[in-house]
Length: 163
Image (cartoon, rainbow, N blue to C red; front, side):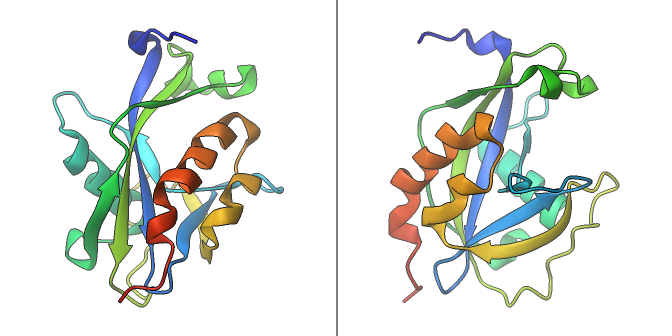
């Protein structure tokens, strides 16, 4: 399917792996149920480059600072997903069919004590956990599932204990 990039909000996603090779997931603030979890992600500001946007979004949503991270890799192409009608009702999403994302993978060099979900005034997550990369597609909203399956395929080499 051919998509018009202008119909999709530009976004960055971050896959953060701990020393054991597990990936960071946050539970979306105010949501419950089996599909409330996701990686940190967010919009790209006007004129902002992709990598700095990823670091900014990660810090705003998790409190993880750049000095605790090593870039492992990225996915070169844009990954797309379409919003459901209910998701589109969100004021930030009205003018877009969905999001197009550039994804970055990082190794986190910390023990979790510096993770702060209240770093930014607009809290995205109510709790967080480390998860097995191979299972993350089971805990995200169905309309994002294809993107997360791609993360599994692309980022599996990083889901190993750090050496």
